[in-house]
Image (tube, rainbow, N blue to C red; front, side, top):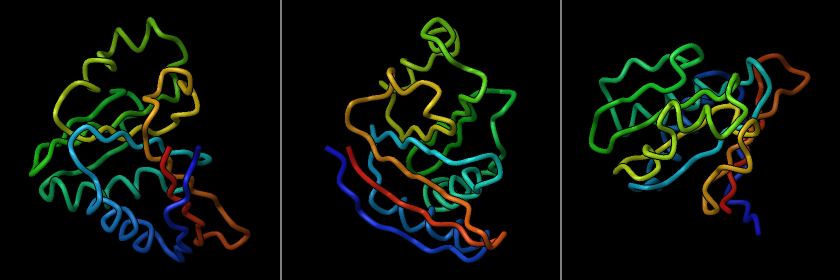
Length: 143
């Protein structure tokens, strides 16, 4: 059962980043964060906020072509982009299941692409665009 934790009305990219930074305060080793949202919604910006708390020296970029970026800090952060991944063989190929066993936090953009392979217990962050170009509705839930 999904339990909503918080809804945030982010009026700018800096608000989205701050939402990620604040959210990072509740994360612990082994947590998985499934990010959902359209192209350009602010998923990477939200991850940049998480990293600013866990891995302050990290230069966060979308892992669209590398599939996964690792950031070192007080707690390792593993940042995935599953836009082009759709099957279990590809997940094994990138070591996805191995990352789930490592001591760190996994954050996954385009998680809906691999929904059936996600950990049962996870956070779900949905970032929705609004009619106002810069405003986002960020809903954080826990499964």
